[in-house]
Length: 335
Image (cartoon, rainbow, N blue to C red; front, side, top):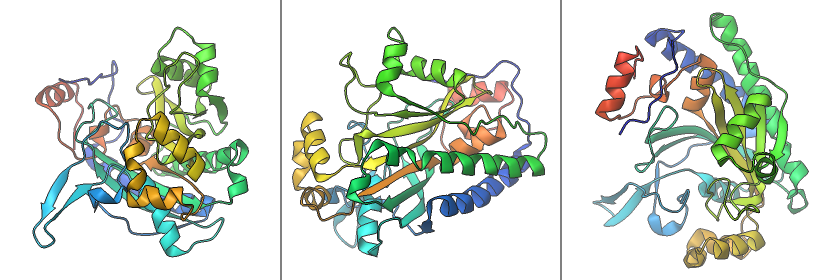
């Protein structure tokens, strides 16, 4: 069933080949700026992992990974949902010290995704992670990468608009910081998405913090797996999307779980069975570095900077017949 919503009067600013050229520019410009802003080095990353390793991201705990068998090994592999846990293991393997980090291209298949303007079964993002000191596991340090990331995005927009002056140029560099509980207190009768839309419309660049745990209402602002982000030290970077008229998540990031917070969150999430998986066992035994990291959506960033109404305009994926019909009728060209 299609959940596509086409804004009234929408027309793409760029043609289909101009769009491809602009996407290439975005990738080249932003990747360089991100690496410099956060002191990150580029590495290669897996497309699939062994299911028994515990390295795959369980997202909200209900999504099914794509699993396939390998003839030569007689074992299975699972296509990644994200690289959140793999990156922390990689930093340990590379022997990086405090302040050093990595970034990589993450490509994933999320077969159970509810598809709409913003969501596809294909996910592409820049994943980054860096080593921190245990004493830096606090809210102020957690906020520190946000403005450099926002600055890299806005700098990328500036360069892109010099090449394509017809593109929108409306992002704000000024970041508003707010917790999910503060949002619930401000808008108690709204859903979490409605709160995001109301707040981000007024504060056009926002970092919403502390996502995953229960609010005073007993509900969660949004789901988060218990074994990568510390729910008290994470958040989402959002911009207001003028094309779609809504809050637009561009990045999810956070300080990763310590042995203590992993222990607590596994129990809270009813996921104690993960304790004996190799990754979780190493973490609980204090054998992995303390880290901070996140993901920045590649197709999402292209959508935002190019003023696109549908993610299928900036990435090739599979869509249901209704979505294809509605987009064709509205003049939206899916790649």
